[in-house]
Length: 198
Length: 214
Image (tube, rainbow over all chains, first blue to last red; front, side):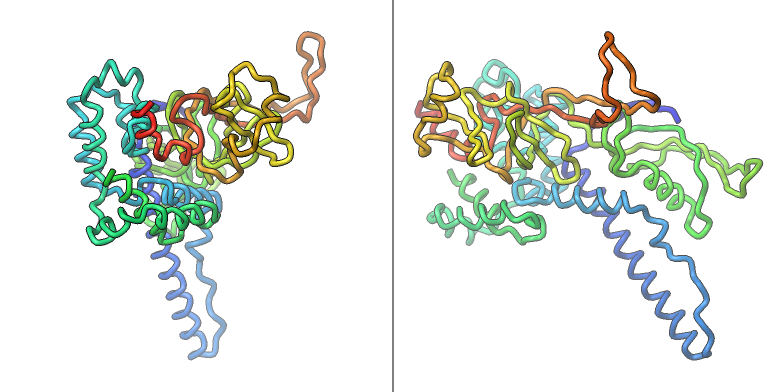
């Protein structure tokens, strides 16, 4: 075995999530087919009175390791604290295009896409020597980032902007549940609303 | 993502490409590859040679060039992680599928101290950096900013290390015998939260406005 290129490209969290979701959908489809086939075989066997012939199980071919990392990584990438839930493919594309004139490095753009900084302090962490390099464009960058995430329904944003405190508790509860990735997580969207409106 | 050369046998019941991807995934998914990172799954297959039957087995062997999706945050990258546990040596982090991430004491915000009752570190932004450990522990609890277990922290990756377990008898370095069962972690990521903007995300939620005022 030989490694030709140890870092062919950098993938953002959003792209990895899409890849894993495809894998997951594929797996679910295959499980369904396998179950259907098995049932058909059993029905046929019951009709003829013969024991069902052994059929190779396509699921056996899938490694445990792959399933483990697939499920765990999807959980991490869709967690309530990740911005992937409000991102769209078009949004990410538009974001990277709009960031082009600011002279950010590839790695910095990747982190902007992964972390969606909506506050100045979050941008400071990502971009080195931010003040020298971006000067007065910081607000502009933040606006581009904000506009790249999925538009939220106007009714919820206007209602919750008035009640930032009531939006807070569900968010904290959701963060502490280990199975948080599966919740519908209204909390985080509400929270993003609040930040958007500031 | 990494193209590699690899031999493997096909499962005859599956379509060709699916069988190849399946076998590669079986071999690398969720494993740490030395100096590469934690392999997640196949990204795509660039080329696959012709299947050959070798002497001695009934398998078809292929030469394949493919790209893998690998978890390996680069040094200076900022990522989100969850606090798994804290002890006197530092904080252990987790991203769900990977848990060998640590924040050592030097990369914690200063002044900082470990509270043995809470089993958690706290940061005292109001006190002076020269305060001793005991002075910090005498501080009023209300002023402390705790880094609790399960909290989401924004961390910067400082460095990553790989460790290959070598077989064989224990070796002596500089005349000191290294105990044989001191197993290393195959892939270890060291992170820091010592800068402004890093640490629990809740610390910085409204920091923008606060910083502007200050």
